[in-house]
Length: 276
Image 1 (cartoon, rainbow, N blue to C red):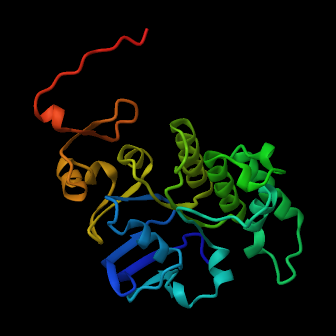
Image 2: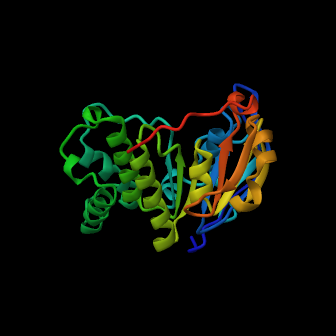
Image 3: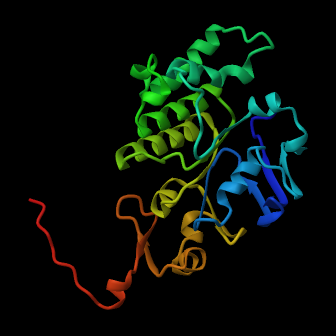
């Protein structure tokens, strides 16, 4: 594999039980950037991510990794380059945090899975980056939802892939830990050149962290590009059926979506509450 590992979908159609949910998507994931896929519930964004991660085979079209058909490559070969964190991962019953994170090293080990100093270093680094060192001896099933999510991210980091695919990595996390995880992924991208592709529901977080924003509606890719070029009131209405204003985030300058609810359309006013 080259340093610029390329992941591309060509005319991909995806289906569950012959019911097509993604229709003819062409997507070239920009190498070394953060790509965020957004869209309304049921639009096919998680399904597309599963195809990019070799979990779901297209009924038409193909996904290529460095010009090779992803679904014809050996699983271990793919796993050494590409890591996928699904929306609701399931840990083996009774497994400890340390053992789960250590499983991220399996693609880099031989048939006898001999543990090496490099493996130990990678696991220690992943635990430190996700602030989960103190959880090593605990069973995964004992953790809170937020702790569990950070442990899964640690396992992905221990795998050390060149491409990270994450389906809702901020699930179960409070806002502080959401920002922590997204900052971590952004740092990995900037410092190591790791290509990151993730599905997010929060449009404002998506606009803040994405280099490349992909907007889906009804199983189709409707817009893609830099957030400032893609995200406007018409895009929000088209993809989400939501009336909104798009203004500049006062902190980052990125697009920020401000929904216009029924109260605003009726001209309702809000009373100001003192926070002092």
